[in-house]
Length: 581
Image (cartoon, rainbow, N blue to C red; front, side, top):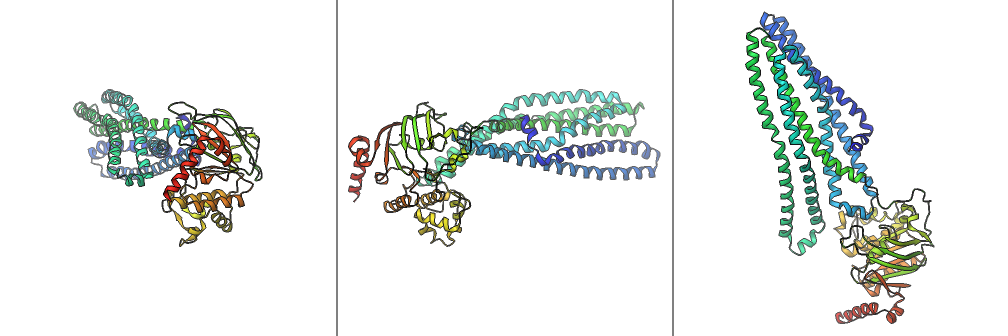
């Protein structure tokens, strides 16, 4: 938490310094006004000195204007400093999250990371804005006002010295109870954000299965849980208001009662009593503002802990500090698995997803990976770009352990078309040029032609400038897959990984895409995960996975002789095709 409070002000430090200076000016003037009012009553009104009253009135007006100007400046600088702090903190969080591995993201969950980067930072930012003003103003105003009251009458000051500690005791008691509740509130907010995110991403599935009512009930439960947690926390906080009102009213009555007697006995003047009552309001206001800052601090501390948890997380996949710069050459890209085993760190069962995997893919080879659902196909290829690290064994690229590459060098030589095709909001040109930011329109069009995507892109009214909505919702599944393939091909990688990336295109289109691979990427090592045997029959090597282990390795014809699993998959698909025909 201390690291957060001190490390993210950046260029806004000048406002951080100027805010308390202007607050002091504003507070000093505010403290002077009741004394001037007392002088008007005791010296001007009592003596009938109109000139004195006018001069003091003009001075009070000038000081009030000065106080308003200082208050404006302090508020502006507090706002600038806190918003700049929030901006820097969000950037730091986002940059740090970009370094996370898949397992790091799994640990926090996407919804929680969204909440921490938005809601938690906003709570901390609001607390900073309030604290920058009040942590200077409230204690200073409280202490100076008490000193001034002592100069008027130590007897009346004793009333304050009894009331203020009572109020502070109430504040501290509520603060200790609320701390845990605000942590629960943020956790409930995580859960509700996850429900919203999941629903919006899967809205087509929800509508297809007519599950809107189910989703409404699920969201209502999450929303109600958040509301109850908020109300429980707020219920304790609002105890402060009636407590402060009771103490304020009792103190006011005591001041009028004892102060009136002191005026009657000539110990203080009536103007001084009015000033003491004005200082009462300032003192109680200071105490209440300080208590509100403490409450805000409690909530922001819960948020700060959650933010610090992210910032202090060391990504479990990093480049070695001494890793040399290496590039994977276009005519290289050999891949070797040496006795590789792998389990997910947050697996509920702790079982190995891959067991003792060993094989070699030579540069320019096409290696297909087939197997049943859950056999570990996607997990296997995710180890090549080091999205996850092996639990045992080694994955080598060009004879070098992937853990000895700088991550950016390793992944720069690998192209991927993931199982879940992802397009970003922006134009088609923007999406395809992710493969190579400096690509020309001619190169982009060539990549689209190779991926069999130019036929539909060229028919769009804006061509390459056609806007893709978030998630690619305005293109079909097959079009999205071909755009993603074009993006990977534009990169001309040394290694290309296709994770079931042609499942939404017809067999003829898939055949033309494979032809373009052999023509345009003949030196590229290609890994293909596919459900259709027709997609892999021409591969140089086919790896059959079964329950995380290798059942067989060979060409199509070899596997038809040696692997019962492969033969069964092939036979069932042929029979299905014949029956459909």
